[in-house]
Each structure stands twice: as C-alpha cells, then as structure tokens.
Image (tube, rainbow, N blue to C red):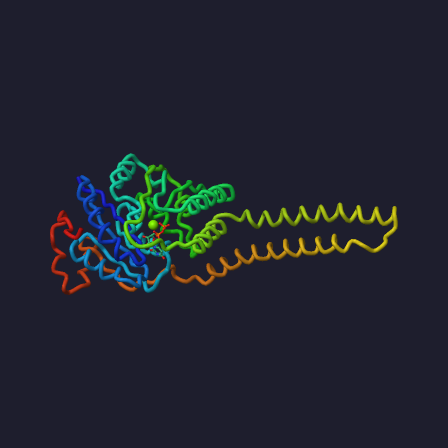
Length: 338
Ligand code: UDP
Ligand code: MG
C-alpha cells in the first residue's frame, strides 16, 4: 500500500520565536500517523526578524521540510497561495505558525479525508487570549457576510483546514488578486465538514492583525464575495427618490392651499445634507469595487518567490544548500529541536 501524501503548509511572518516550538509538534504528529507520507512547507512571507534562518535550521534537520521565501511581505493570503502552489501531490493542510491551530488535531482531519471529505475545516468553539471586542466583531462579520454573500462561508472558521487533492487543484485555479481565502474555500464546494476545536492562545510573538487590518480584511471579504452593497445603494436611491416625490407633492399642495411665504431653511439644509451624504456614500461604494477591478485588470502575479528549497522528498532536485549534511537522514527521524 502506498502512503497518502499530506503536506502541511505554514505561512509565517516574523514568527522566529513560534516556529521552533511548533515544528516538533507537527513532526511528532506526522510520524505517528500510519499510512501518511507527511511533508511540511514553510513560507516566509517577507519576515524581517530571524524567521528565515530558523526555517533553514529546521529544514536542515529534516528532509521532509521544504522552504519558500517570498520577495517581500505579501500578506497571509498570498503566502498561503504560494505554499499551496508548491505542493506537487496529495492533500494539503493549512496551519498557523503561532500554534493557535493545534497540530495534534491533524489525525482527526485526515480521518475525515479518508471518509471522503474534500474540505475539512476547523471551527473555533473558543478563542483564548483574544479580547471580547475581537470576538464580537468577528462574530458580527460572519453574520454580515453570511447574509450578503451567496457563497457559503462557514462561521468562525479560519484557514485551519485540510484540502483533498481535487479541492486543492480547484482552489489553485482561482487566481484573483483580492484573495479572501475563507470565501474561496467556500466557493470551491465539494464535500465539506467541520471539526470543532478550541483555539489556543499564541505560543509566542504577537498578532499581525490589528483592528485596521481586520477592518480592511472584512471589506475585502464583503466586496470580493458580494455585490449586495451596490444593490443596497440602488435601493437607498430609489427610497430617497420616492420620499422626495411625496414630499414635493406636499410642498406644491401646501403652496396652492395656503400660499408660500418663503421659509423652510432648516428643511432645505437637512434635505441637501442628507442627499449629499447618501450620494458620497454611494460613490465611495462604487469606488471600492472599481478599485478592486483595477487591481485585477493589472494582472500582476499574486506573489514573487525569492527562494524555493524543496524538501528532499518533494522533488528530485538537489538541496539548494551545499552545507546541508543532514539532508539524507531517514524520513522517520525526529527533529531534536524542542
Ligand atoms: N501571517 C503571514 N503574513 C502576514 C501576516 C500574518 O504569513 O502578513 C501569518 C502569521 O505568521 C501566522 C498567521 O498568518 O502564521 C496568522 O497570523 P496571526 O496569528 O497574526 O493572526 P491572528 O491569529 O491573530 O488572526
Ligand atoms: Mg494567530
């Protein structure tokens, strides 16, 4: 029986402290799974700390580890896409570098995959080490996008997921620049199932997503997966026009009936300001979509690769590092770094 290939993809941006703690956990889990040919791809998303040397050290100790470095920080979505693009066979499993998605759950994901599911995603039942504000806004976001978008996007689901080979190849066909991954996964479809898990606190380092970034991320998600806001603008316009019409009738009627001593400055100002505001809002909304259209029209690549170091088992190419003496240790050897 040939083993099923499973590649763990980890996007990391300034995770020099977290990676050495995460790696042994991944390796231990992969080693303990029978019938699984486990691999790891670490993607350095243009880190400015010691992340790349740390990755090189991990790769030197373990031939199953492949490394990819992007030319600069492209963001998590692009980094994940880059990692997924470099898998040559089998299924993919996406994991955060900070240990918030426990690798110990991987066997459960694999079990579901063996049952025939194509997209097994982790659903957070609890988020430790995150503020109530973040939890509340996250919850609100899933509600809004669930209402607005026709693409099913499961609630409280991050990027922690396993993709079967066919789901992976389907996902790779989606080359849009505005990459809202949760939505892209949902768009792909196939047999999906969720695994509930407790989201731990970060093992080291700090979150890269502050509120401003999360807000932009939410806008990205909504505009990439729904044109409902444009329609809302239309309805607002129609509603305002109807009200204006009724009001105009009333004004004319009033003038005919009781004459027109010029007054009504407050009403006039209120109407002008309201309409001005609504118009600007609608313009801004159109601008959001136009801007995204512009980015797509440029057809730039999603990311640029600075270095690609395939794992020993990942392809027949020789290791890029001449001094890599550990590259030929047996695949079952555990990494000693703890
Ligand atoms: N990440 C990345 N590029 C970025 C920002 C984040 O690759 O520009 C990675 C980061 O290293 C981590 C994952 O994305 O592995 C999730 O980031 P983080 O933990 O900061 O997000 P949070 O869990 O707080 O939402
Ligand atoms: Mg995190």
